[in-house]
Image 1 (cartoon, rainbow, N blue to C red):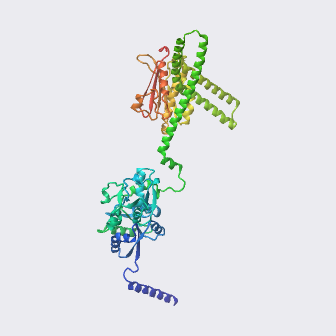
Image 2: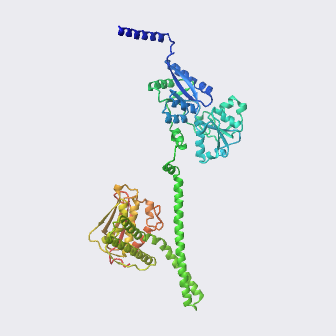
Length: 600
């Protein structure tokens, strides 16, 4: 009995609800679609301007009510945050911000509407953007796309520091308040949306006739209006994140079918809007919190590079000048001492003869010192690097407590040997520069390359570069100075290592080959080649190969290869470079005559 009574009550309730629904007017219970529209001229203007769209949607969606809400920037943002809107009509700049913050997505773009651009207006005779420096500029909001951000971009492109020299006067909406600020003397210029100046002058020519547009740029898309910025895509009609896709599709179809009043088309490309915001670092691209170091470096990369290059040049120049001054001072002191000694021994010598001798000695000394100033730095690089490596190795072992006495003795012997090698290099350079005969002796190329490996092996391993030696059997001996030939090999290998700094690790390989090769004119000899897989040289660089002071290195001074060529030619040989036939890189070929074929 109780179950039957309950069933009867449910049936009676449904019948009452059906009768109530039939008694209601059509549409009284329909869902109301709320469309928020950005208001920049007052709610009356917004409702009037978008009334054709509102009426078209009401006709196309009879099952829904449609309500238009005119909202400012802050109110529109708040309504979306609280999910109180179904659709939004706004300018492209504000749309990009809302797309990032509230995930709205556009379904149509206004077509044939007022151009999205900005116009600079003033009552004073201003002509260009530069005239804004030191003046007051009226704007409705720093976040207004057409009311400020477009002009901000133009100022940044015209003169990066211009915005900091312009005083902004924020008037708030509606936008005619910015024009009123100019007329009332609170600002010298104002930013208006495109075509608004013309509309205001038509409505009230007596008040707004004193204003004129400036900093104009021609634009066929401006619909005959004066504009001071580029023209961007039209306003966006977007659905919110809570709007069902099916409803959004119905609205999009209805918008495309509007034939008069507000015209809509498929969504336009807003990449230009995003590029502008990225350039100004606003909207979705606004930086918040501490700026990472990498972004600072990216922003000021060109200036930092220029400063570092200038600093490097200044440092190199200062060191070079200081070195030359010190050496010249020592040379002059030594010359004065010798001259005083000669004057004491030859008091009866004629003054003319002494003066002539002094001038000749001075010229000779300066010539020698000029050559040695750069040559010593290049020649001592490898021995000093070896000494540093041995010393650092000993220091690390001492700190670790694992250095045995015999290892300390062996390392000290190596350091002493490299020091003697540096002293030998100095003596050989002095002898070579002064055109004296160096110490020639038979030199076996395989043994020479093995000695060189002890010096270039460590830096090659640190750089992850393999160095292969390929010496043909039965090579004839070379008559030459072992120290100078060692320097040639080390210089070529070091250049090969430097050239592969940007080469992929798997391809980092230096090949050193030695082959017997006879020269048609000079007879039998040995051809030594050093081949890398680096960046190589183009035809212009090859034409200046081994020329003094010509270099492809950022920190090079162009003397290493020139000195190597001088050593090779002093041994009766020749040195040249050529691009390899089997891949990228560079191959340097050195030919030296066999023992007994060159008398030095």
